[in-house]
Length: 229
Ligand SMILES: Nc1nc2c(ncn2[C@@H]2O[C@H](COP(=O)(O)OP(=O)(O)OP(=O)(O)O)[C@@H](O)[C@H]2O)c(=O)[nH]1
Ligand SMILES: [Zn+2]
Image (cartoon, rainbow, N blue to C red; front, side):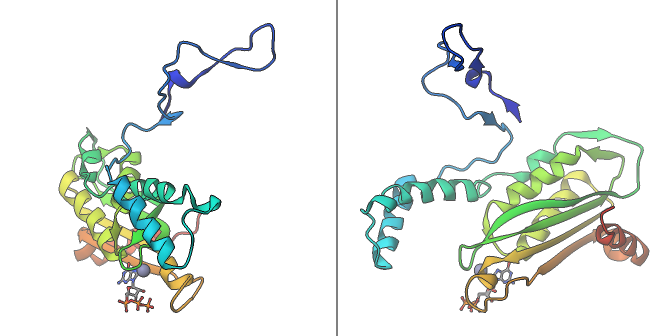
């Protein structure tokens, strides 16, 4: 992330204590924080907006009442954000690697994510833990979180999220082993339907040595499950 200079506030002038906005900045401004690597997906805003109007009418609401006037546009923006990873290639984050003579476990734990259940279009949120056994090259740690973030931004089931991340890391890093464990709460099980707040869904995908060698598997699961110190 970086701070966009176009959005900086000029120092106070002598007449007022209030900061003044730099006159040089363009009328159309980019967001204050811009993450150039964030996933991006164009959605059809107009169609989402008209669909949301239809849904509001169908549930007995008046989409023209004050409080709901901007709701269709808000929902369209929300879907653009929630589904930003739909057409992107999350593997691109694993393209830059560093040669490193290290062949033990690399684990990034507790990567928070928010995804969307494809059955109900309700969020499921939780944490992903990613471990791999490098084969001569390592990747920047943040890139593992970027992969999770991007794969999460799709409508899906947790199982697919889990094995998609594992496959990407195995393929792109030629890792000797990959372990991905995902734990999350599904709103469709807590807010509606069976209504079981507190229920947790755990999924795992093991590849290479973590799948075939019980000792490696036990070691990585021990690290993942280790209580935070
Ligand atoms: N395997 C799996 N199931 C999921 C996931 N997210 C939601 N589900 C389940 O998808 C199922 C959809 O079941 P359906 O019977 O088609 O839909 P439903 O009548 O709304 O189901 P209920 O939630 O039981 O009311 C439900 O059991 C959900 O709990 C997921 O990530 N993985
Ligand atoms: Zn669901």
